[in-house]
Length: 171
Image (cartoon, rainbow, N blue to C red; front, side, top):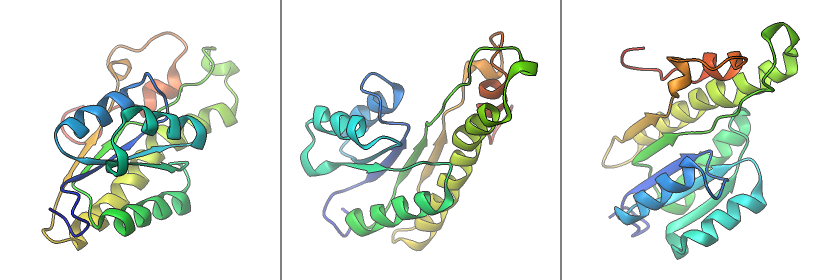
């Protein structure tokens, strides 16, 4: 058990959709006796997911835009404050862009996908590593959820395809 008496702790990004991968992963982790921090951009749907999990104080919603360094830092500070440690980060947040040819894509649409899908994974991994190195016992795991689209792209999906290549391992 950790210092909060809550056992192992996991953080799942992109968890604000009631039917998405983030919710499914959070539920699986709860069944494996983890406390789970769910991160998403919008507080209301995120709180609904947490409420639907029925996990009481073992699930915590933390609204956060993973593309913003200060927001990510604050979210991980909250994890440390509430649970005292982090054992698993599941980097799952991801957005697409309008399905248009790349020459019609705006810079803002491209940048939004890059900020959430790629920069967000980096920022969360960076904060997770800092926390995992500072805790006792030291260590943890990071899972970066990529997409089959990185290997078999769909037409008009350049931003998503370019940013959902799993990093680490073979690409």
